[in-house]
Amino acid sequence: MTKATVLTGITTTGTPHLGNYVGAIRPAISASKDPNVSPFYFLADYHALIKCQEPERVRQSSLEIAATWLALGLDTSNAVFYRQSDVPEIMELTWLLTCVTSKGFMNRAHAYKAAVAENEQSGENDPDKGITMGLFSYPILMAADILMFNAHKVPVGKDQIQHIEMARDIAGRFNHIYGEHFVIPEAVTSENAATLAGMDGRKMSKSYNNTIPLFEPEKKLKKLINKIKTNSLEPGEPKDPDTCTLFGIYQAFASAQEVGVIRQRYAEGIGWGEMKSVLFEYINEHIAPSRERYEALLQAPHHIEEQLQEGAEKARAVSVPFMKELRKAVGISKITA
Image (cartoon, rainbow, N blue to C red; front, side):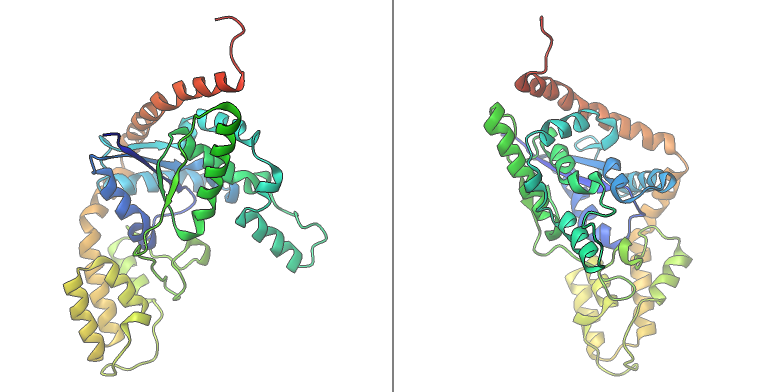
């Protein structure tokens, strides 16, 4: 039986937070242990440059993300865990794909259209003001990430589905011109994937600056949970758990039975201070062992680097021969054997 190749990229622009953990990291760690899957996980550091021009932030984020995944138990004997920039064939493939992708097709990318719309709304004469070629063409880099390893499945949030559709179209176009080289990838979205609200009630996101870092030290974690916005209902008054950020976060970590108990306590009018305390204790206990491993890994960056280099070797065992095949397909090869 051929294993399904599943690929996930993590952009290196911030510190992993609770929302990242329940939405993407936890299911990916679980998949890394599945012997029927061939998982590829990478630090998307070239993607980071599109929106972040702070070198130290990109470096620090790469370290923190790699340490997080390893601390949470990523199975690197089954999964290929690598840094995008350690696989130069990805950038070469990006160019091959760029040469079969029309500009009109790229004009339809959501991120580009949103940036143009923002310029037009602010009264700019130039709709492309401030839009880099990185932003414009990053769906092609994303397609190269996926097609380099002929990924069958790419787990994504609903906001990323268009990029997988674009990768499918680009792969189809290349195959049509040069012959069948690429698997047509499939987007995988989970209907029950948890999306956490942040401290202000909006979706937990770096762009809203409302995140709770996953491995925040105990005292800071408590402080952040205490800052989560709640309504003005008094202790003793029944509360609606389904519109409450505290309950949403608790539910993403706890068992169905534990959630049922807390739901009952909302009906009985649990006070906000008490619920914040319950949430802190639960999350702190849940992540404490991994946080210890994370802090130890941050003190041993050479170990993290070794793991990434091992992953790069495995990745390049695939990418180097495949790139040779693709060069030949497009007519780039030595004149004599």
